[in-house]
Image (tube, rainbow, N blue to C red; front, side, top):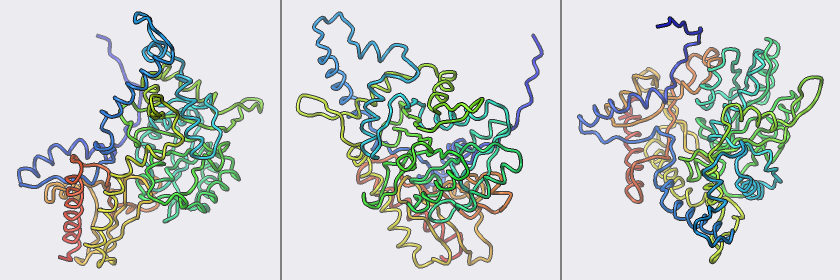
Length: 471
């Protein structure tokens, strides 16, 4: 047998969410032995009540029958074109009909004219993150990505895979990242010899920040990006999981500056999680050799085809079905995704309201000890321990998280692992007094879901008061 020596690789830390997932079965067993009911305030998964596939499968079957009838085939031995296409190799861009439909419907929602030839299919938004990072890492030069502190753990995990890539993070307040801090970090990275291609963020329903950026802050961030000549990579999984009134919703960066933005869409949060349908879209141009400019979408397509040559045409046609609605005996293109999302929002809006009402009822009198963000969108709130009557600040480390499961049956996620390395170097205590509480997932439906959510938040409030010594 040959003796193979693996190339030197960088050891990567396991994210706190991954560690929690791995340890949860054992912790749940201990909790069960102690007679505790396990409460889910940690998982950021779409709710099963929202993602029940049965209605979608019936809708898809009817839509496909509509396509067959439209082809006018009478011979049962002749394979319909839609069916042949759904189970064959396809272009890396996938079926044009799926992209054209999405471009039409999404464009109407955000007052844009989207070019379907610039829609690059991805495996969810995570696939878009991987794609845009890979595009700038191939040349081998040191690259620095700008992002928030805290930021999505999936992004930091992806960046850590490249040894010549690093993160320069920007502190946030209740409206978004500091524009002055962003400009300073871009310039600091360049002074240290890094190429800075983009700023990555989740501006709507920030994961894990638990809030949405204000319109004024978005405009300030866009101004910095334009001045400094970098792109904005807008991860938009929660764009339609929005709790603000329509007139109060901020604009996505894509609608503000499509030539400055790389927009990452996923269907996962609006009831289509399993097939992992997503799109990367941008109207930006990049300068290559000899000053020539090419569309970013062309480079992204080349990059995508080298990694995932054939996307699932069946999944894309299924998503296309989702973007059509019945009209009598016919199917017509939806005018908007919002009504589709509204069906899902019922669950998340109810859960969010229960979370906020119980927190205020149980902990509102202890604002010197606790604070929490008010989620304008998405799945999360960030809960902060401000003080402890016991004289020591509550430390949300791994031991505390395990104790919450074993002693209270509560699954929660600590915030410290969402802070990039440089943020923790600036402040070793970053996130060490914070938890990310999710209100999106439970294992029950209907009234039982509502009861379980209320019970979970009440159990959390009692545990929080015990930790600071107010009970």
